[in-house]
Length: 199
Image (cartoon, rainbow, N blue to C red; front, side):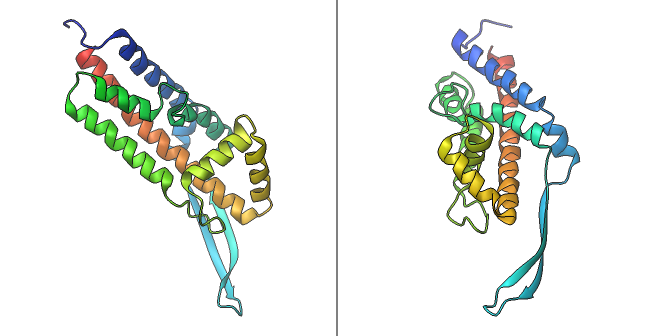
């Protein structure tokens, strides 16, 4: 191998990202995703006088909460643009500054756009029509798992009062965790290829 075209700082950041993804993948969530169904099933009953169908039963098939919470501790490092040097946005900026093939740069830019577009989409929780996937993820992450932000904790408690709303919110939260985990794994694969080719 010839002399590296990547500086020490770039190599350290690529390696730190990869190490963090390995910790994420070791959380047990990946096995859950591969082996467990993830769904939210609803059965409807009678129609109300107002013409709305009543919900008869509902069931969320989700992942082990300990695995999800462990994964979130790592995923937040990839989504915190303000503080974390391995956030997806900052990794994109790093890629664009490196003397590497345009294919790698386009790839991470595409992943960042797809991720951001998804996070900005409406969450689909019926009783929270104006909330995005990002709103649900941040509220549960910082209201229940990390820091216990007082305002977000209050919102979580309010959501938990409605079983149906809370189960929908958890389903959306888990879906976001799964999607972000997959995206970070793709970036890790790119990092490995870049380090091998240029490092």
